[in-house]
Length: 144
Image (cartoon, rainbow, N blue to C red):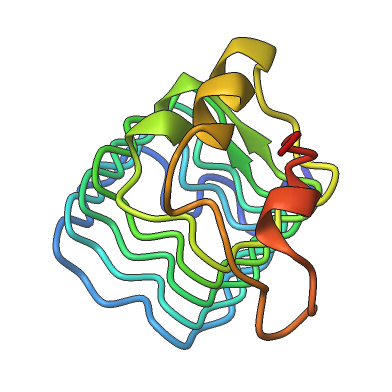
């Protein structure tokens, strides 16, 4: 039997509360249903990672490369998404509960229509991503 996703379950269903994953390469890893309260992923490569139904309250995703990552059905209250590159990622309704989205790149991200409307009303949805040079509001296709 071949391993799926480069190692099976990876971090799925684990309690990684308060741990430091900053600066690491976790490309394609499975974080399904993790409890990651206050966990930091700052400056990490989390491309294509699956955070389905994860508890990400107070988590730090500042300056992460989260292209193609799945944040569906997560709890993201007070999560830091400053400077994130989330192009092509998947988000659920909890995106409206994050602490900040400033300077984020959300190009072609999949966001529920009703959630996107509320996201575009946020004052912190502004700035330019320092890596991609993409304007945050334009990446979300917010109408000014």
